[in-house]
Amino acid sequence: MGVEVPAVSHAADQAGEIVSGVSGKCLEVDNSSTNDGARVQQWDCKGQAGSKWEMTRTDDGALQIINSNSGKCLEVADARTDNGAPVQQSACTDAKAQRWEAAKFPGTDYYYTLKNVNSGKLLEIDNASLANGARAQQWADNGQRAAKWLLPPLKKYSPGFPLYAVTKDGSLESWNVFTSTSSRLVSNWDFTAAVQVDHDKDGRAEGLYTRDAEGNLAYTNDALDDDVDLGDGWNQYDLLFSPGDLGGTKASELLARDTSGVLWLIRGNLDGSLGERIRLGGGWGAYTQVTGLGDLTADGNPDIVAADKDGVLWLYPGTGNYRAPFGDRIRVGGGWGQFNLLAFVSDAGIDGRSDLIARDGAGGLWLYESTGKADSPFKPRRKFLDETKNWSGYRALF
Image (tube, rainbow, N blue to C red; front, side, top):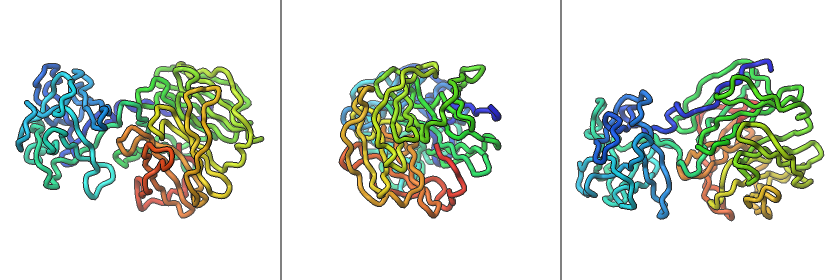
């Protein structure tokens, strides 16, 4: 195929870790204990079992933070409300002491505070310590740096994909959208299309479809010794992406637009192979850009957006029926003609929904966080990742 396809599993990139914005250490259960009442503290991030956490949304909109090793929930001990009360793990219940509210740390884009619903106080590290073993506790909000955290994406369901960026000279970079850090993966990326997929719905992209210049499509993931060859003829499509599972199978489907403007759904399988191709309809050539990833409208179905030649953006809400996967389009608004690239990225807002990025003609990269509302799906935009960077030098973002 000409180049090595990078590994696409990201479970080890701190996606499941809660990291202190002061010490850079991980929130963990002491000694990876599975006992009720086990102490929670900070320690160097070394992939230890007790430092892995999952966040799920409760019915009242708060977060429940579950240790992946023990299956137990982060809570304030004995539902205390005083400053300095220790934080521990305990069997998960519906107690308010086990519920947390995330909010952006003032003056930052990627750090958060975690406020306990019961006490109204913030999760922090005692005395902003830099030491291993410093305990986690709660304290009233006074703007303290000790309460600043990097958080993993939500488990239900929230894509935690990296952002891949391909330079015009063929270098492939991987950007972590939560930490704004990047790494160069390969220098000879010559594929004409690439699509990340999360077939097993764990929030991480474990698979990657790639199309080469000759129109051959292949699939790879970390568990495969060799790429899966999916055949030729894929140059008939000028657009290829995956919004997720559209209801056809348990895996993610592909959407492909052919050069005559017909949109096709191609059913996916868990092993990366592809099944039936279903014609969704013509007229999609009227759009300059079509993209989607995950649920924008908080109904559990993946949605897509499309920008027309007049610069109007439209939302196509998902139905959950792969034979007719989208409902009637909804007008989002005008002015989108200023952007030459639209793509969806991970749940940068830590709210269970994927978010839209847009690159303008001057090379600025903007983030539109999702609201979960079909009639007004995006919050006001803000600069994304490196605010001073000119992103015009990239030929693809995915």
